[in-house]
Length: 332
Image (cartoon, rainbow, N blue to C red; front, top):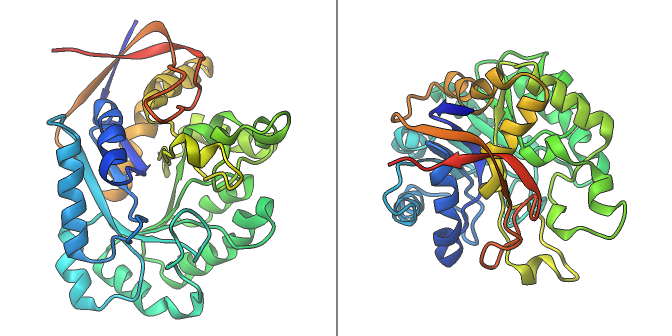
């Protein structure tokens, strides 16, 4: 059995820098026509000059494989002229609350002061992508942040607002209240709960932010995704960290899922008897919400078992050692 996906897109992707970029970018380029690139590098991508340099490095790392990096700027206070100059080269601005995740220390500390920049985004029709967590109790951070999403959606009704990597039933409910709001969902949040992370021996490779939640939350995500909610888009949040940053006292947050994304998603949708909806989740919804016309690329999957590698150079991939029923088929 074969499956062909037209222009699959990863709408939330971490590619890192230098040696790590060279290592992981080919994994995404082999499976996707493009991806939304996160800007939280050691030195945030918060200028057009840095954005252009990073995009060039990504294209070089893809080694000729057709892949479009959809670039984002790290949220700060921008002047209208800056945004006008960047508008044709970005897919949006990415907002991080300060210190809430990897390399977000220069993120937003006072949400009362972001209105002027958000108003410019609304006026210029530039999407705002948000990592939606507070600094409260870890299991409640996304739920507590929903009031910020509500304020943004209501105050700026023409703003295209994206709730990134949602994990809770309440976030799914909020999505249905505002037509200008979309959301990305990861593979790992569709498969795991907090019990998989800490229910037995600690599993550092499953530790991520936002943290995996309850079976109820996972079921709400699955139901909405598998039913084909038109404003839910696939975003892997694949976030590679080398072994010495995962197996240590201060374990880095991130799941490296890039090598297994489309095969694992195909298996999930097939098990739910809705394989025909996979293309919507990994392509059509994002293209419609973001108004994208990516260069044409077909990715072929074949129903043939393979075992996920235990180690990918210095990284341990999601589902390592497990056998998946689908694999990406290389064609000349």
